[in-house]
Image (cartoon, rainbow, N blue to C red):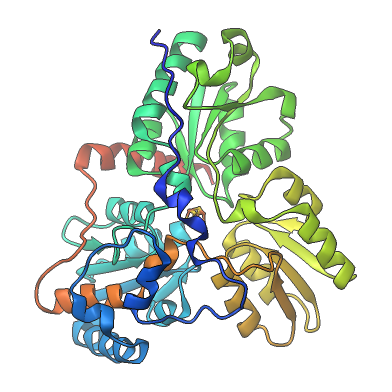
Amino acid sequence: MVVNIRERIIPITEIEQSAFCQSDEELRSKPLAEEFQAGVQWQKLPVSYMKMSPDELDARIAEARAALGQKLVILGHHYQRNEIIKYADLRGDSFKLSQYAASQDEAEHIVFCGVHFMAETADILSTPNQSVTLPNLTAGCSMADMAKIDDVLDCWDDLQDVLGNDEIIPITYMNSTASIKALCGRNGGIVCTSSNAPATFEWALAQDKRVLFLPDQHLGRNTGLKMGIGLEDMLVWSPFKPLGGHTEHALRQAKLLLWEGHCSVHTRFTVAQIVLARKQYPDVNVVVHPECVMEVVEAADYDGSTEYIIRAVTDSPAGSVWAIGTEISLVNRLAAENPDKTVFCLDAVVCPCSTMYRIHPAYLSWVLDGLNEGVIVNRIEVDEPTAEHARIALDRMLSVV
Ligand code: SF4
């Protein structure tokens, strides 16, 4: 067995997460040259786009999009800015958007306004003659960046050594790189979303196997608890410590191993915020995403995926009050689209997902202009062996849920 001790490396996307946090509630786009001052990594693009005002960009995007007609599909994740989401042919969570992309075989170009792993999944599920574009290549995901394939391969080898072959099933959340999904596909594992995670656990546990859950420890822990696995049967695997920080004996006892990853956006929510919301609005409904920490999920009234949260608020009676623990662009949109209800974010600090926020209209304009000129800017392509195995893990998910 190889003993690895690694220096703890925090992904740049995690370090930069708070760059766009602000205390006023407006998240209106500014010219990109001004937003560059946030001090995060941005992809370089022609300087003319950086100087354009939001109104100029708006007109330019509308024109470019009209010229591309049916050849183009624009997908917008719920966490995108309003100035981007208005151009989306479909809004959704990552899997809904990728499935939609796969169904649009008459479209030559798919522009995915989301983050990198989502564009990868769309490429895996789309046809070879469709291009998938991510407008800004620095739009990663801090959670996906916490599970590097080399670290996960080391973990997997260690677990085979300690537990024996075929004793553990890898389950990866959709929010992971294509190479992690492929590792799951190659090793009898499966992909899950935040809505079908319990069904994939049930499938794995029915085979009398242990589970390695990647990359979000919180979704894994919250799901494990729902499935009746006690905290005493769960361990967090640190990629920076030998054997993840555990003894061989402890690993053999555990039922659920949780990769030490998290979402920088959803771990901002706290029980104190819920207590305050209940004090201010005694009849409040608190709904949070299962990427929040266990204590927050337990203190909330409901927890569920982005689509679940949208349905809960939209289908609720007029006059109801909702405190929400998920990304602020979506919460603000829900508040605007449900004026007969009181809808607010649990966190008073306006703090968007800083990588989603990097899809500035200037980038969308740039890639659409490129497509009109016959140039595919920022194409995302997953190599075929990786795509083939990732597809196996995705197909398994569809056969289970
Ligand atoms: S909200 Fe969290 S999980 Fe989603 S893209 Fe942003 S960092 Fe990643």
